Length: 424
Image 1 (cartoon, helix red, strand yellow):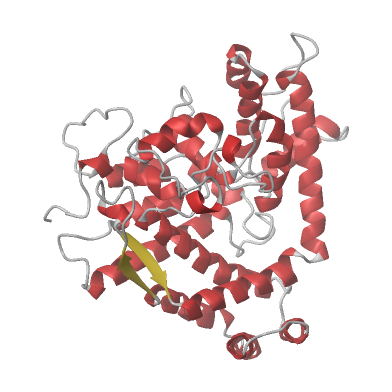
Image 2 (image 1 turned 180 degrees about the vertical axis):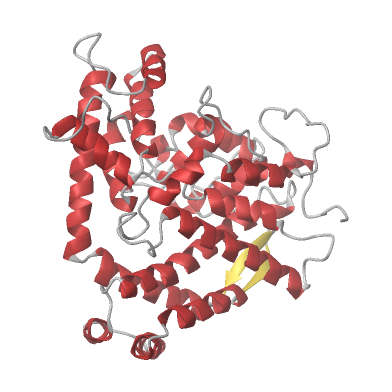
């Protein structure tokens, strides 16, 4: 296969030099992808909430199946764009392995219990530098992916830039914004991803800077939007939260455009016909074909082609995705059943964190009970500040699967649960 002119040494570079392996047959992007797939952080996604708690029913999506679906859509977008031929060619194309890596890793940092867990950890960690799912993904890739010695995978610059949905540091974020930031100590990886070039003055911290994304990050973002605007909707229908009568009542209370009304009727007809999965899957193809590349210029355009292009999305498809997300939000995520689970998730994580805070982050006594794995306790003992200790505690909690979080809570607070042989 001829060399891909879309990428240069700037894109393949890593913060620390990689030692070439004898007989290596993969390019750097394929190495990145393989390291992600074979990590425990990736496997843990199989037991983390997407819409419904993992394990409630076998056929509902988890963070793992969602990530796989996003990766498939991302690769298909690459194939669609390559087929258009107006800008790209056989020797100049957006690398599908790189996009796959970006998609597979985009949710690595999500804690147990989905967005409810993320909101709780952000609130609890606010005094110590915050918690943000995207920032945690970056932390996993660069610092903690491999448990042996807690080291990262030393990703390529292109992968780092691909997963960096947000480029505002915690200390820079607007006061009224709860999330969408990086941790303050991640500035070195942000600087490296940007080729150590300063952001221009017009890219102010917050929305403007967070909107600055490489083409691979834009593809991942649209693939993610496509997957959860359609697949989360399908799960809500299969679970009985969404049916024809509820959608029709919901629509009657909204101010919908004629296009929105047509899409609502399409959805209702799919439910009446018992063809939800097939017809929503067909819309995935429409979302893929609804995009094209446009050229753009910015402060990184001279360094890499990854910042010479923007993804243009058909406004009709964007509107329909927003409509589907609103239906799922109003009828599923705001339902009493899920709100009660969100309340329980908040309660569990808050109580576990408070116990660990008193024992490890701001201890009143130098020694106490061993409540965390010995290897993490040793790191905490070496940490010089409360913020560093809190980050290590937060890492442990954020890594938990839904069920491990439940079990940890019960071992700490349920007198009738656990025994001396209960270690998992």
